[in-house]
Amino acid sequence: MLAEIRSLNEECGVFGIWGHENAAQITYYGLHALQHRGQEGAGIVTTDGQKLKPVKGEGLVNEVFTPEKLAKMAGNGAIGHVRYATAGGSGIENVQPLLFNSTTGGLAISHNGNLVNANHLREHLERQGSIFQTTSDTEVLAHLIKRSGYESFEEKIKNALSLLKGAFACAILTEEAMYIALDPHGLRPFSIGRLGDAWLVASETCAFDIVGAEFIRSVEPGEFIVIDKEGMRAERFAYPNERSICTMEYVYFSRPDSDIDGINVHSARKRLGKQLAKEIQIDADVVTGVPDSSISAAIGYSEESGIPYELGLIKNRYVGRTFIQPSQDLREQGVKMKLSPVRQVVDGKRVIMVDDSIVRGTTSRRIVTLLKEAGATEVHVVISSPPIKNPCFYGIDTSTSGELIAANNTVEEMREQIGADSLTFLSVDGMVQNIGRTDPGSKCGHCLACFTGDYPTDIYPDTVLPHEKEVSQ
Image 1 (spheres, rainbow, N blue to C red):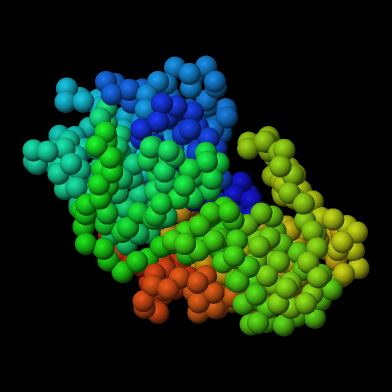
Image 2 (cartoon, one colour):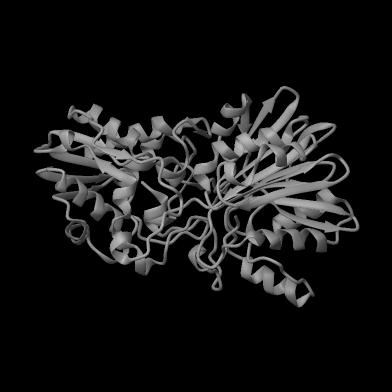
C-alpha cells in the first residue's frame, strides 16, 4: 500500500562501503535502491583517511545529491542513510548520518531501528553533562561511545552497544575504519556484500544488486564487525538472543527482489497468498492486489484458488511526495491521485482485493469505494497478515493501540467500517510457517509483537512510541 496515505512506515535504510575509490557515488546508488525505506531525508558521509565529509538534506535521494556534490565527496569509505520523519521529528538536524567531531577524531553513525531505553539513557547522560543537539536515538549512541571508559575505540563502541536495548542495525564511520553492528535479537535485516576488493553493508540485498555487488552473508545478531585497511574481522559485543526479525519486513517493508536470511521476499509473499487461499475459499471472478507490496501475495492467491489474477488497481508513480491538500475534501481525494481502478477489469465482477495489512482502515475503505464506484459488484478483502493490534517500539511508525482499527474492533466491525463484502486475515501460524524461516522455536525467528503483543525485549515504562518522538532514523 501507499506509505503516504496509510501511515505505516519503515523508518530508514542504511548503506555503507569501504575500500572503493568511488565510495560516494556507489553509496548514492545504494541509497536509491533503498528509497522505499525512507523518503523524507537522505545523507552520505565519506572519509578520505583524513577527514569526514557530510552531505545531507530533506527530500528524496536524487533531490539531495547532485553530480557536483558527489564529485566533491572524495574518499574510499562512506556510509549513507534514508529516513522517514515522524511527528515532531522532522528537521535537517535529524537527517542521518549524524556526524560528531572531537579532538580525537570524527564519528558518523547511520542507524536503523528504535531503542526502548533511549529516554533512560538520555536522562542518565544529561545528568552527566551531555547536551543533545537532536531528538534522534542515534545521538545517544554517540554520547555513550565518547563517554566510555575503555581505552581502545573498538572497545568503546562495543561497550556502548551493550547498553542499548531494542532494535538497532548500525554503520559507524571514522577516518580510518567502518564498524557494523546488529542488536542481539536481530530485529532488523542487515547484509554484507563485496564489490571487487571493497566491502559493503546494506539494509536490503537489493542495494547490492543495483551496484553490481555480491551478497556474502547476513550480519548475525550481537555481531560487531570491523572493516579497515587490513580487511574485515568479526567479533561480538553481545551474545545473541532468540532471533526475532521483524515479520513485516517479509510482509510489507522490503523490496520483492531482496533476500532476507536467504529467503526471497517475493517468494515468501506468494506463499502467504497461497496460504490465504487455503484458509479461506471465496466465490469470485477476479483477484487483484494493492500496488506494490501486495502484488506477490495476490498472484499466490490466484494460483492457489484458480481465480484469475488481473491488474485491477494502477499506482500513479508520478505524484509528488507532498502534493498540496489544502482542505479535508481534497485530502479525501488523495487516494484517487495515488490509485486508479481499471474499470474494464472490475466492472460487473466479484473482486478479491488482496492487501498486506490494515492499520487504521481509512485507506482500505477508500480503495473498496474506488472498486465499487468502478462497477465491482462485490469486494472481498483478504489480508496476507494477521490483524495489527499492538504498537511497535522497534522503529516502525505504527500508532498507539487506540488508533489501530484491529485493536478496538472485531473483524466483522472492521468489515463494516471499510465497506467490504467480506474481510479475512491470515492466521499467525499460517504466516510464520509460509514465510519459510527454519529458526528453531514456534516463532521461527520472528518478532510478532504487533500481532500478538509478545515483545522480544523488555519495554521500559518511559518508552515513547515512534509517532510521538524522533525514532532512530
